[in-house]
Amino acid sequence: MPSAALISVASWLPEARLTNADLEQLVDTSDEWIRSRTGIAERRIAAPGDATSDLAARAGAIALDRAGVQPADVDLLIVATSTPDMVFPSTACLAQAKMGLTCPAYDLNAACTGFIYAIEMATAMIESGRARTIMVIGADVLSSIVDYTDRSTCILFGDGAGAVVLQASEEPGVLSVHLGADGTGADLLYVPAGGSAAPVTPENLAAGDTYLKMNGNEVFKFAVRAIPGVTKQALADSGLTTDDVDWLVPHQANQRITDTVAQRLGIAHERVVCRIEDIGNTSAASIPIALDSLYRDGRLRAGNILALVGFGAGLTYGAAIVRWTRED
Image 1 (tube, one colour):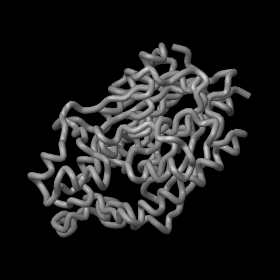
Image 2 (cartoon, rainbow, N blue to C red):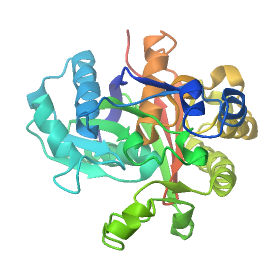
Image 3 (cartoon, rainbow, N blue to C red):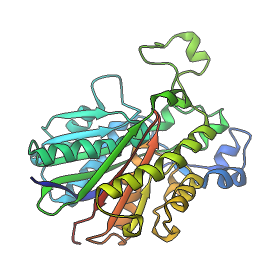
Image 4 (cartoon, rainbow, N blue to C red):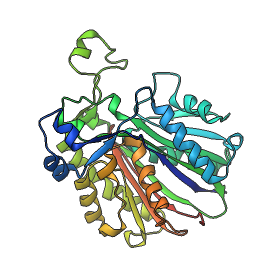
């Protein structure tokens, strides 16, 4: 049975920056307050007219180039996002056309855990022999659903995209993936209106119900409880322990969450990849963006064991244990 290996990683971030100083002009907050509670100093914001598919296609094109893979050789495209360009067609189909791909393409919505869910889907397809080369992209334009009068949420989120190419390999790359969901927590992080349960009306537009809503304290409690457990389960499935992890690559949601998770796993700060200070929470894009920063900094070496871990609306959570096999 073939194994699935990550053969490239890439990311793309908008040029525009929304700093804490900028937010001080919009809501009652301060740079010190934001930094102390989230670890965020700035976040990137998509340019006017740029949709999620644009960011996704740019990151995907870089990942293809780094992999040395031609567009015609991609067998499947999965885009993890919770901010699609539109209800339909899928963002994946729109990004597919922009990259010149001809493969099947679909969106996957597991919110901030979407990238890990998509890695599991891609790995299963490759291991089954149904596909050889798959692109997975995490992309979100969260600024499109953030209420910039709500200081509890507008300080957190930014825009961006990250992509990986997976390919069939004799050398195991994706060692295990463990996923979870708890739908009883759906109301802790959600957008109330805009779907079939509450179609858009003048009333819910005026009420701000098309914007993201979050119970931050409860999401924090969920994350620091769920992520250590699912990470240990995925490591055990791989025959590994936390001592074997070279790099913990977490969803970049909140620095305090990252620090607490790392502490509970017993993973030193030096082995944790952090990008939240300069990009904020980019949802499904945050893990591949962080992984790409590790690659571009020259810190990622063949044989490194990576724990990619995340959580998000749903509530969803998951961990993927990956051996980086690429030689650079």
